[in-house]
Image (cartoon, rainbow, N blue to C red; front, side, top):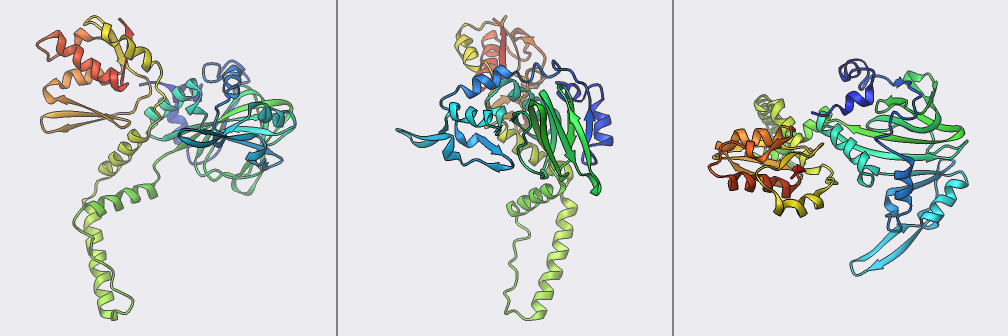
Length: 378
C-alpha cells in the first residue's frame, strides 16, 4: 500500500489526523518548504496545460473579485465531424490573470499525470472519492468569496503564500499558508482566501467519504432489488384504517429488513461504485501494449500504482474488477491472483498453478492489456 496520506500529513501520522481532526476542525501544518510538493506539481506542469489549444473551457473558471468572468470572454466554439465544443483560448485566459483574475483549473487530476497519481493513491488508501483543483491567484487578489464546501478539503500550497480567513464556531481566525504548508478544512467550514504581495498557486484536494446518508441510499437500492418492501402506499382517498394498517406493516417490514442488512455489505456496494468510477488516466499503457508481444517468462511486472480493485469468488472463478474491466481467473489460481494484486514487483515465472509457461504469460498479458499490471522490465 502506498503512503500518500502519510506523506501529505508529515510529520504527523494519518491515525492522529483521523482521531483529532477529520470532520472536527481545521488543521494547519506549517513547513515553509518550497520543495515539499515538488513531486506533486511544478509550475511547468501548469504552463504545459495552459499551452494546450484544445483545452476544454468547461474545466476552467476565471474569477475576479468573487465573480466569474463569462466564458464567452476567454473561449471559442469549434466544430468537428463529431459536433461542437467550447475551448479555452490560452492567450485570453492569461490576459485575465495578468489583469488580476484568479484561474481555477477544475479536475486538474484529469490533465496532470502527477496529480492523477496522487489522487488515485489517496483513493486507494482511503476508499474516498478524490479530486484535485488548481488555483492560480495573482498578487493582491482573491477568487471566490466566503463560502463553505460540502466535502473535506486539503489545501497544498505550491508557490507563494495566501491568507485564509476561516470561521469555526462563530469566531474568525486568519492563517497565512506558505509554500509547502498544508491546510485541512472540514466540510461546512466557512472560509475565504486572498494572496498578498506575491502570487499564489495552491491545489485543493477534495475528499468525499461515504457519509451515513449515502449508506442509506445504498440500503434503498438493495431494497429496490429485493422482493420485499414493494407494497404501494394507499391513495389519499383511502380510509384511515387502511392507512394505519399500511404504516404498521411498513414499520414492521422495515425494521426486519434493516436487521438483516450488514454494514459490510453496504460498504462493499459503495466500494464497487468507487472502483467503477475511478479515474483511468493510467500512465505508460501504450508503451506496455507495444512491448507485450516481446514479453517472456522472465519479464518483471507490478500492479500499477493507485488502481482500485475488488476480488470476488464466483463459483469456480475469481473475478478481479477494476474500473469498468473484469478479468475472470479459475479459482485454483488464487495464489497467482494474490501475487498479481499484491503490489509487489515479481517475475512472471513466479505465478503458481500453471503447467506451462505459456499459461503464465497469457494470464499476465490479460492484466497488462486491461492496465492493471505494468511492465517493469522485459
